[in-house]
Length: 210
Image (tube, rainbow, N blue to C red):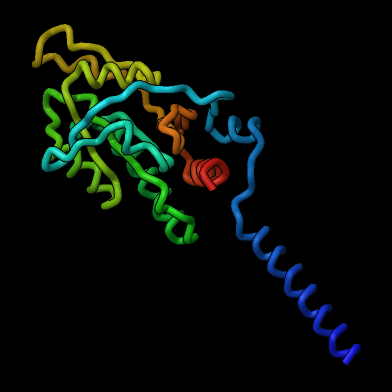
């Protein structure tokens, strides 16, 4: 009995070590602050509080600050008529989600939001359809420019009122091409800076949100 007991203990020990080894191999590595920065993610030492906001998605479904609570949010500011930067960045985000799904990375507490910086032309229905064209899980939202400027300013995204009326869209030419990271407390946690390389984006995102 003693021999069998010892063998059983040894087997349990070996299986435990093996499980820990496999877990270490399959779990995303936690990167240091410097490694995150090198790979394109700038994290604030102290996340920044943001005030409440209200945007609208398809069927006038509201998207508010309360919808950030309990979830890691990637938020991108773009518009449906954007010629290159927006579709390129959104495509990288869609590839990120695909990779995460393939790795069975938990996405229940993750969300991906596109905020229109062209609310004069992008209706909630249009921006949501555009976002879902990249991935069905994406959410597209829009609202009047004062609300947009309020949120964009808090998230360090340059956006201004059109100076030439509704037909002037020159203010869209130099929009900031960052991807904003908001933590489950609804706080501004950091910024993913372009260029967006899938391997680096995946590495940093998993490290921070696991």
